[in-house]
Image (cartoon, rainbow, N blue to C red; front, side, top):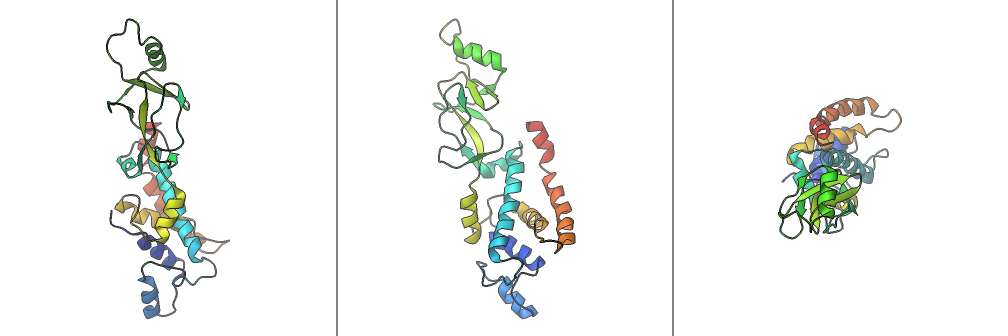
Length: 228
């Protein structure tokens, strides 16, 4: 990843006339400042913090779409839960305390890392309840029913998507590199501009960029359905 958040902030700011300056030279000077701050944003309608919020909202929407899909971009949000015993509620945070978003991913034995296989709930519960009887071979089975994890191991860990909004706000202000894939730079600009209107100000522009953003989001919808 190499795209910095300023690339998104400045493109949104320019399209809503929030960049300081009335001449080409003044606009160029303000537009190219890195990191972009409230000294370069001179709009009574969209102050600098509101544009940061637009980027955060845009990123959050794409994070939600990706986290609820089986798309390979889940790898940009990858996290692992702590060890989970049988018949335990799905964790809401990763092992490092970052909030979990979206649907769970792969399940692994917490001791040896062997992937577990999803099986019907009844098979999993029967096997776990009779682990010391006539079953001889080890079973790496699991089933997630509602918000509860059932499995046949001592403990498992789950691969999940994680997202910390506070950390991302700080990353945007500090001009860190994008959390998501570089090719979503334009998508975040489009989605940010969808939200960039007050009353009827810029509403036609917002609708136009919103239609483009929907095309980006549709990229994840087929796999969202498949993962559901």
